[in-house]
Length: 342
Ligand SMILES: [Zn+2]
Image (cartoon, rainbow, N blue to C red; front, side, top):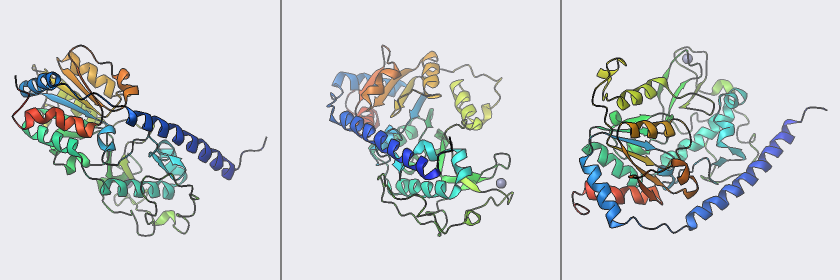
């Protein structure tokens, strides 16, 4: 049998993705149609009292936090670009095959993130972090909305990297820096309206651009620069994972890097799990470790279908609905220093 032509494979992929997008859209509509019960005054009072007495708080942040800011999750109808899904372009092999196409995709994602605004939940978390110096946020989002809301940078670990950083394609080179250029090069303009699965021919917008025009690493001068985000199939950055692990062992700062110098007080008082289904590592692992260290857990999640995966236990708080509304509502009692007090 002869190999399938590229055009035919592209057509198959586009059809499959369009069908998947329709499926996600029906799930999105279903989730939106659910009328969640508002949290009861009793639930808010017990949560506020616990936040008030908590010193060490671990916050796990996922895509659901930014969804209300207009950044779609990759498992939603908006998580497609042209005829591609996120998973098909956010990979090392996709970049090796067609770096121009992947940079075009990231032009779009950067534009989308830059146009988005932090929502009330980003702002409430930033305020909480400032009031609780023992808080650490483990952020799976790459949009930098937490930082733009004023979340102290020393209290946040962006474990999936950032859309606004670039690095050398060769990890051994190690070059990495901030980069806010949109488009990444003038020859590759952003042409897509945000949030649309476009049937446009993927090759049309990138024709005329040459790979040698893409930004190259200024250190080794050999390799292309790529987005400094963690792609599908890649491991999480070791330094950041180690930082979170040290924190879970009771350490707070760079001074406690030595893994052997375990700090005695490794109590974690509270864990907030926001906008993530907690299905994938490290999310599920962190919940288990925080519980072992004594934490009570509060979940904020709109996806009722994944709420079961997070396995709430007795003593947890489960806030079901839009994180952008629920996080500020739940933290209001503590942040305002009034209401819902025992
Ligand atoms: Zn390099």
